[in-house]
Length: 331
Image (tube, rainbow, N blue to C red; front, side, top):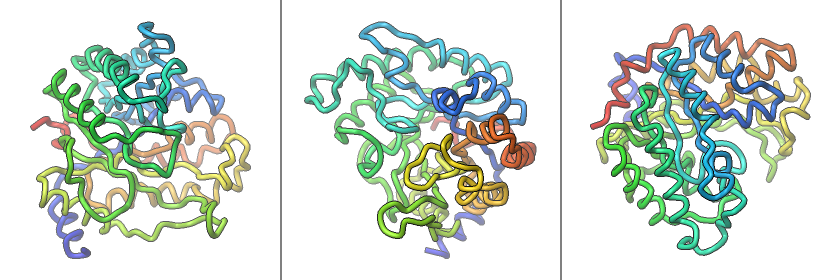
């Protein structure tokens, strides 16, 4: 495993590194921030790649009544700065509760009773943004088969396959990313395959089940390089870091806004954030989307602690432009 991982790291050494961020306006607002100002601030420090969400609950709160105003201004801002967007589509998307159905949909019901409405919604989203110059790639759902986290009721592979068929039929120009759920050894071997895969990397979390303390995952960078090379060998598909923890993980599920700064620093401070960027580089993967950019701005604006923001500003000043990134050139 080590040798395979080191080979992957060596084989990727000449390719440019690109950092991006996940950005969720709803989460920024929950932290007491202005979402537009937050995204603008991220653009100002050099972020040029965003993973955005298209929550069904936000866009179609009532049947056949669509509100794209939020995504529209996000795309408009990205275009103004020549930034690129990975847009997540489907039911399960980043941030709690993971699945985001509108109130008029009951996902505990038979899938045949609500899948057509979901596909219809996805069609609206895809058709609206597939020709937008800021769009770089799609992500289909998010950590779809992860049953241990979130409030989701349906994990049907047939539904995921149908969503993939719809997305591919509506847009053959852009890359489709499918994200892995965890650190398990292995490669996705069943359909849908997507064009590239994303993996989530979390480094320091609160263990609420056994030790009731902060837990540092022991996986070294070469382990993720091994997974990427294994996938390359068997499927000919590359991997990106779709979600790299760059946000505090408060103890016992406490909201960040009710957690002291000293406690937040137990799981993430400026030194650890700097190490996250370095860890991403050490995996050999050339695209890393950091998780928690809204949180950096919250620390700066609300808690008057710019330490994380300053680290991010320094790191994004080093990054290359995603416009030259070979990963997102559709096969």
